[in-house]
Length: 237
Image (cartoon, rainbow, N blue to C red; front, side):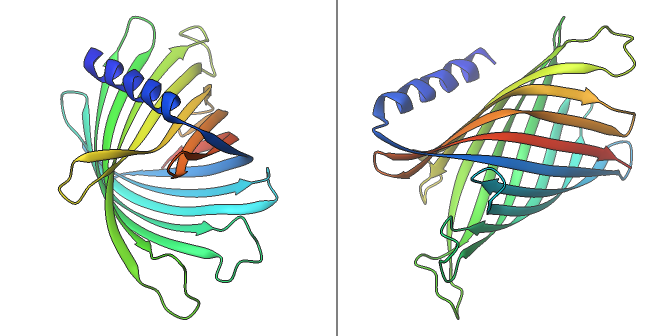
């Protein structure tokens, strides 16, 4: 775990040193995660994401992401899933405006309980089929690439243990790195920094909401910063 944390801060520090120019936007990300227990060990989840920029004015991205998770006896979760993405050009007059993406992914998550709170860390490998640029109105061609994502999450309880509606402080940092054709990480793609609260509304519903800053590399030395409010409702059937 210490090695992961040191590596994470090294990547962040190196990225900040190399950054030169920034374009800034503001956005809102909303999502609902629906969990269907299949057995004691398997869970089916479907995610629906709706993301905008210029606050709520301009549609930015839509995602549908089904997955199946296997929970091992040693606090490790193994997940495999598929994502369908529709990425919208911020220029609403662009024609075509939508770039589609299909990706297949695998993930390993490990949870570490602490005296106060928990630490979760996961690694996700994505295999991406993205519509080629420049977009063409009457045809769709896709190129293939892969990237790896690492997320470190810390949950800290803010309410007393017997409180009817438990509230936690949540912080996470996530790094996206592109892989070359040989499967070796070679270039920073983006980073997410989030802090907010998690509220257990009932045995079936949990609400996670807070501020997030995303930094994406658009080209060499050019970066896009999105300051946004991120809200996710988790519902368990």
